[in-house]
Length: 260
Image (cartoon, rainbow, N blue to C red; front, side):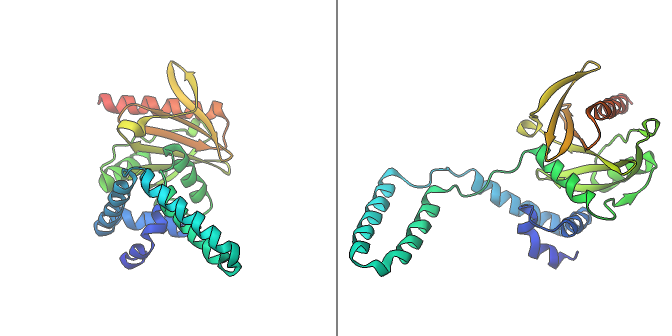
């Protein structure tokens, strides 16, 4: 994807409306293009300004005027039936302008990660760096995005590392690590977060003394937790026992790296 192509598709990219292949191409382009990353950041800032505006845009006085106008037009339509269609269009436009909020709220973080798992599972080559070398992947994430990522070894459980990529979620770079068990994909996400983004929902599960959140989303199982600096999310069709084992291994790897 070129800079011009990204600029033309930045709005559907933010809305999650690009086809799978185009979304993957945009993510790959953003990972290496500061200009387009800046464009994306500015557009997100603009949308955030809109989100912070009051949800009630119309005063009670203005609403009363609109109601009076609609009633007056209804009386006119009673003896001018050809005005029905224009009136309906006018009323619809007024209701949209007055009653609807300026922008849609962003999707919860975990739901966005599941969407990415689904999207990349459908393309032939989901990874940017194809490698089963854990050290190579960790160095790649550090060099490309300044992300300090622990890449755990799940091979004793028959889960093979196949590579990684950089993605975007909740307006920040995400380390996305791919594993496979047979034909089943396991997605491991590491998302730097702070404040409200670190709030997770789901079924609390205690596994080996650590609390995780388990949740079914869009036909997939998810396990997530946070250490206050990052959210870790695992998405797969694997069962919860396997996901919790993988989550615990990643947590221990992360703790060990932090001690070094």
